[in-house]
Image 1 (cartoon, one colour):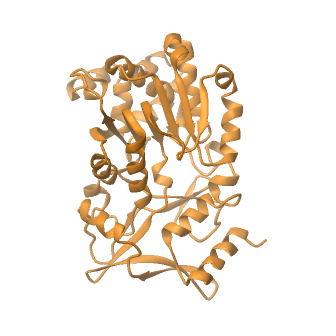
Image 2 (cartoon, helix red, strand yellow; image 1 turned 180 degrees about the vertical axis):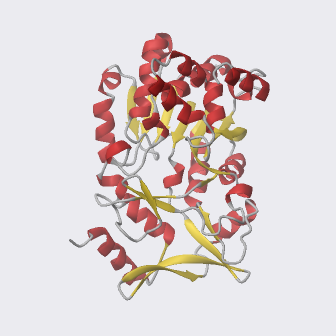
Image 3 (tube, one colour; image 1 turned 30 degrees about the vertical axis):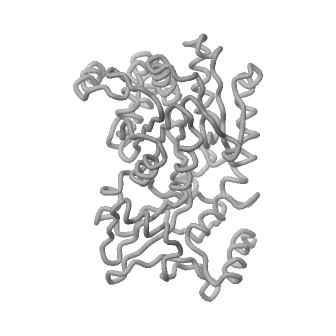
Length: 376
């Protein structure tokens, strides 16, 4: 059977001559009714990949615990906004935690979800019905989201933003476009499509070696600019896999970081199974830091996910675990090697908030390792 989305992609290339990889990635993931995130549930066993949420409910419970400390120490309003809530299980774990452990916070809490996929919104509404009926959860779109006071967070959102692919060819930077050559989609180097890309590379001090590919996320820049204007007071917490620019564009990453996932198996066949597999790229957190600062978001901390979760209180979850299986699942979130701790990082940014000295995400390394020594 012909792949309908592949036909649409080729038609677009026929009209334009070539399209950027970002355009291709956007169509593959978000094209109405045919894009990967528009027609299937990509999460968990039945999807193409696992997330930290699938590993253990302690991920969401720990984040919720950390947010309690943020609310109590800063006095910001008890509002949470999650963008890209996916399966909805993270929202459920957080809301369940507050209902069970902190009923006072639960009674005051407003949980807002920004979601692009109609399919996922319907799934989320089914899963969160108990909390929706209690008046705790509402949905909106990013365009209508504004004047927010509270904690805005995302988990594995930015890695799904389309990227431009840049290559150094004998000292000259070119952009890799998608063309149709004899019926086959392939990459083709040509002039960089936008001055924004060149500005980004200068701002983040990105330098590529000869034949090295770098992935540039202009959508992330536009997102953080818009988000900064929509936050009146509070925190932006971005959880994702990626690094700051110095490490992300290291010499050894010759082929960039774009990759695909299909049925839990990684591949680099970008032009196969269009609309049926995930396409993703590591996040350049430096871009979020640089452009966030320009528009009013101050960097508080950038740290590995395992450290963030320990600061939030995941070791309490470990102590409460009722089986070895539960303990193993929690360990996968905080063991740097072999779990979710290797490439995952957390960027915390603030706007118009006074941060106390003993703030939850300012704990010293001594305190952190003291907590670890109690468990391991």
